[in-house]
Amino acid sequence: MKDYDLVSGYKVQWGLSSSSENQSSDLGKDMQTYMVDSGLTAGQQYVLNVISIVDLTNPSETIYVESLQRKVRIGMLCSTLFISQ
Image (cartoon, rainbow, N blue to C red; front, side):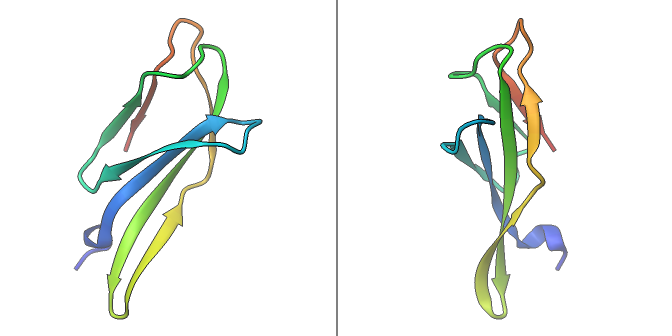
């Protein structure tokens, strides 16, 4: 079994860098891209975090592996955040 086989899905979190209230979305294991196209403000900086959800079998346990947080500024002519593996 490869490490990838243990990943059961992802959680994508985003929010204003000055706010502790993030929005999130749960994604399936095979999701390669994700787009946030509402509720974002052009020119605003957001904090982005991707969490891998990993299911272990022996012992049976679920762990969460967080990526390094990234700061993303939405373009002035765009209000869409596009995330790709």
